[in-house]
Length: 155
Length: 350
Image (cartoon, rainbow over all chains, first blue to last red; front, side):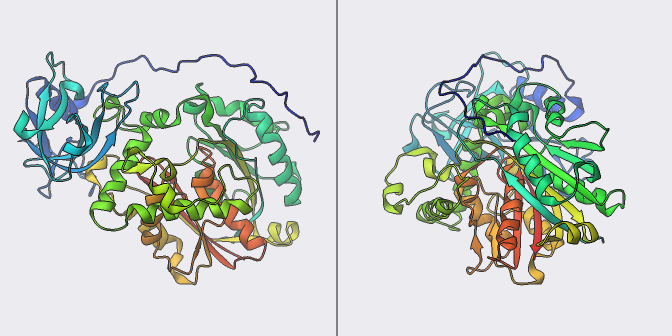
């Protein structure tokens, strides 16, 4: 095969946006979870082995069994299990100033919810810290109805 | 089980941005190379399977165009996985085990440079509870990295040493993208990218492709002077919710490693698909590798991380080590999904 030396320029480029503009039904479990968020409460689901999953799912990831729609209200407070400090937010991040992504185990849950924590500074973050939700001004039934978690004593 | 061997492997040079060749043009030279080296004619290769993703190309059914690089006339048996090429290898291996074909061509490709890779990878998270929050690949890896730091499994210095070793190894790999001598103390003085990860803990953004031919024993022995045998291959999956997993371990790698037979003999080298430094330590533990196992002589994914090919490249690089006489028995690993969610383990022998 001939060895073709590319020209020494930037080549042609053009913007291209890929999107899937359709809506889906959430089903019985996530539908109830997001309706709950709209109403200011967080619900997990109890597996047949007794563990409470938050966010809830229609099946137990450990056994594959159905979760039987056994809902349990959890939180609203919780404990940070791990966190990552984002000093320079990207355009699709929910906050436009530095924040943390965090895994938050809500009181009464056995798994952690991934969400964001708004402390203003990395120095205010720590594993094991207590947080609680700051709710969106106009909840609509989506994960961003929790605008962010904040340190419990400041909520 | 039918004995199956890797008879040839090739990859493009791995670069930050491939601006002048499209996917077909990237693939044609390496497909030509692996078919020629295999000694099997193109018409006699029984099956073709590729791995790629529409999310990099920004176009649906983008893999169909890549068939142009193979030549599809007269008609061929062809398949595709929306996964790393390591899983295309797995499908081809199954096809041979089923007795349907005796040889297969596998290839994979991707140009990460056309988008913002860390944000593209957000789209593989749960579309209801996670993706709307925009967790990028680096932030999710950082959540996992801190879990291990908090648990005392490793220190930030250990992570910097992983980065320095991989990029030093890459000095002998002419196709690697990011190679060099790095001083660990200097690395640790750099600011965090997404705390607790620094730039050196993260993979480069890489464009590239890889191709491989495999065949049954009869075909391989006729075709290759040094076939590399696939002695075990298995892949397993962990839950998609990060908060349901123990991120300090990789149970799916542990299970895949057991099923593939990693522990049944001495391992000389390991090629581990660890895009982030802490993940190499998690994988080493999950596979039960001793300290004398040489890890990533190629430089691994920290030296070049071509999306959709970095896993197949680990298997290809391990096969090169055996074919070249530098190792007798190797383990190669491929991963997919955030924080090592899905893992494939392959045991190779000379």
